[in-house]
Length: 494
Image (cartoon, rainbow, N blue to C red; front, side, top):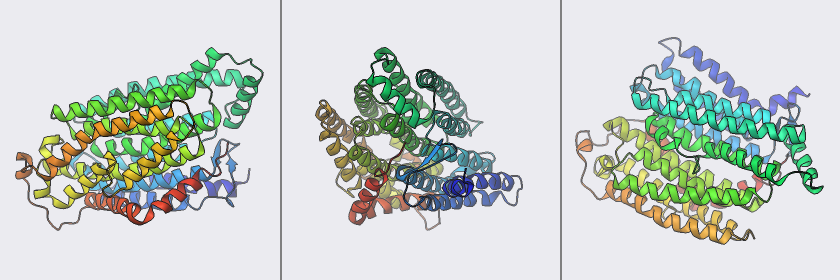
């Protein structure tokens, strides 16, 4: 094993590991605790930049006995994961001051991000399991971080129990795969499954069972219906910075795994209809229950949770064809989704910190009290809705549906029609919240806080940076971003 190549490819992970150790040490002393957030943010930003430089001559490179693969997809996803995580770490600084021992949050946060980044290049079911557990167990700790609040403890318990169920399903699928192929390496599994299929000795029932187990386990990570029951309660009960992490970084990692496993390792005639069914259920459940959240005057965090479920459904529409163009459009959309969801949640974090509330109707009149945050929030909502105003979300969704429609799959046009209907239904709750924010008089909660002042705020900076990137991609950079996503799928290896 050439350790110089290993150290070059895994340098972003080494940076994150070093930052975990450093933040733990800094959190031990009262005088250095205030630097922990800055160290985490800078380390993740550096890791994102370094990840963009990890290609070895543009080739597909396998390391750690082929357990990890560095290809264009891995590089792109790691840049995205670490970059978005840096924004989340920056948005967390002032918000976490309301909790006990805020400095201790960041080592756990960095550990979860490390697991997500590692999943971008897994090439073996064993390393897949290690990456998922690193991400999952750390995320459970993040969800329970407000340990003096009942809803945080409840959300962490629900997350733990459902995560344990999903892990058991994954391990069961892995045991069947190993029993059939005598390997856990993705390349060997793919070739041996294809060989067994070609000579007709692989049972259809076993293939259906393995596909169902894998879809259920990965569907949990994607918060796709009907494996979504954990997400609304966890999103609601967890600290809002954790909710943002789960809705963006964890989802990117989940789709990284889905692309690897379903696209290059294990796919058959039973898998695609199963993914299509889950896409439809996710779109229907996410959008219609989202409307109920508005009607019942619920939590904005729960509303964004159901929005996230619907967004998973849209992304699964692209995944159902497993064509390179569809995967490229999926990467394009999930990149824009990461920015618009980060902007939206940064506004929610700021609002919750100022008012102590996350109720949808308490945000009424935000424009009059906090105009900058209101504008950023509305731009994020319009992009999530797919409206052609600051049209990054609209363009990305158009490419997502267009590539799915032209995939040649028999049921693809019907899937796209359902997704379009779901997008129209979603307009109700996105535009209703935007109307509350812009048109209505300030709520009682907002009336009790001062108007927007000039004070510097990292949460505001996160919201503005995310929105600025959306504007840049909308006006000048969409061709560049589309080119990057096409390059990302150009040399996918197994």
